[in-house]
Image: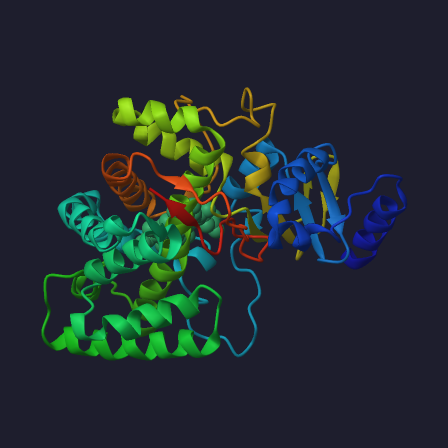
Length: 396
Ligand code: HEM
């Protein structure tokens, strides 16, 4: 049935001259060639929606189509299949649909409030300065290792209420979790189960205790939902924010006049951060699964199909953004899709934006001559979904 339709579609596309090729995609991500990815996107946007038989997924690149997939949850489900042995984290809010998603999200919003985020600003600044103090005399550092990676991990550990003596383990598991290392995921899930048990008896002033206490229509989160929620904050929040910071430095390196302008007008930082998110989106691609047959672009997609939305391509769509391939430091308005759209819009966006602003502000103030080490060979994270460099040697 559906399979036959897909086969026909894919054959039709594969025999078409100039049909999109994915063979070089990973190569683009592993070397300096990364920017070839953006040229590839430009090419792909000319084939708005098509089926890729290698990846067994429909591919969506244009802004309007990507936005529709994000916002039309009735058609494009977030309940994508997981390996059968993976039990933790698969019920977290990013992998559920309404009505389940609605109640999880509403519970999460009760505790992950703008007030809680804003209250952390002085700590975020202090953490940033402590990390900068360690390197400032050296005149050089690895921006990712020394600053961009630790800040979001320390911040989320403080929000969750992870005791100081557990921070080393917490950091190690967080590092493992972003690569979906099953051992790290398991260790972290067990750790949270234990911590939740402790907080049940003795609540403290932290997010875990508030989550345990939160109610929605008389319902509370189950033990598994509590664990999943803690993990989604790490998986969703750490590497993305780390790469937002690193990608900002890549943008400033490519557009030194933007860096200069920000030094004189730091009030432009919030706009600059939105432009970094658009121009070099931390997450480049996400997936959904069709529930019903639907038309997208010029294609009919059967139910039960995986759909990959390339938000990194949508964010450079010329039909939506003027000068889409240029970093415009004060672009406004900037309706990018780097945080998604619709009911799953990033819950941590206010936190990521605040961290971005405070860390980059400190960098502008204390390291005004920062530049990427011209002798460094930059290597991108080998993933088609995540955009960022593995390490970023800088001089100042
Ligand atoms: C620059 C940093 C970030 C980027 C680019 C980013 C991006 C995204 C995107 C694209 C989604 C939509 C997922 C979907 O539609 O399936 C999302 C959802 C989510 N993000 Fe973020 N994120 C960032 C930071 C954070 C932080 C700091 C946290 C929390 C600590 C966080 C927590 C979440 C959660 C819980 C969801 C799921 C929301 C839902 O399904 O209702 N994110 N994020």
